[in-house]
Amino acid sequence: MPALSTSKKKAKTSAKSSTAQPVIQPLLVSILNQKGGVGKTTIAVNLSYALAQRGIETILIDGDPNRSTLVGARSIVYSESVPLRVMSETASVGQTGNCRHFFVDTKARPEPLDLEEIVQRSTLILIPSSTKQDELRVTGSTVKLLDSVGSQKHRVVLNRVHPNNREETLTTFKAGLRAQGIPVFEAVIRDYAAYDEAFGRGVSIGQLRGKTVEKAWSDIQQLLEEILNG
Image (cartoon, rainbow, N blue to C red; front, side, top):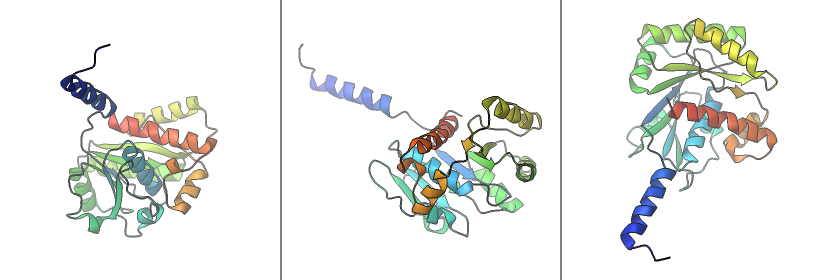
């Protein structure tokens, strides 16, 4: 077989690179809920790591005064293969460089003015919520507040779902929320103890090993794909 010319080699390499690294529109995903303790930080850490693991420059911003994101991601080290930087909202001012992809763990119970700013700056507002009625009530209130400031960017992700919940049950549950005017992701994040282990170590669940970890990481990947595909 004749050798490829230099120009053909370059074209072939370029084509491969293009296939391996699809263009992603700039992202600024704000993760919020009027209720604390709904798993905002866990989702923020793992989604940002999942994107960076694809070799895409990503910044995770801790916008909550309690700094739980900085704690939960304290052992994640920026590298060429996983280019993820984690910083406080204050430190991020003027320090983002040419990065185009951001995940922001917002402070708990943002005020209406905060919500307006979040809506203006975000490409997506992700609202974590379990299926428990008390959380869903607050989630419904959060959705109403976002509706009131003209947001069309928000969507709920069911979080901390019991692993034994049947897909049919979850499908019916999501349909019920949509009937109430609450937009919901198809992907769900199931409740695995491995998330607590990852947080304790200050890493993403994608850095751990085990069958349960694989299931949890699959949930995160499915949610990220849904975000990237609009």
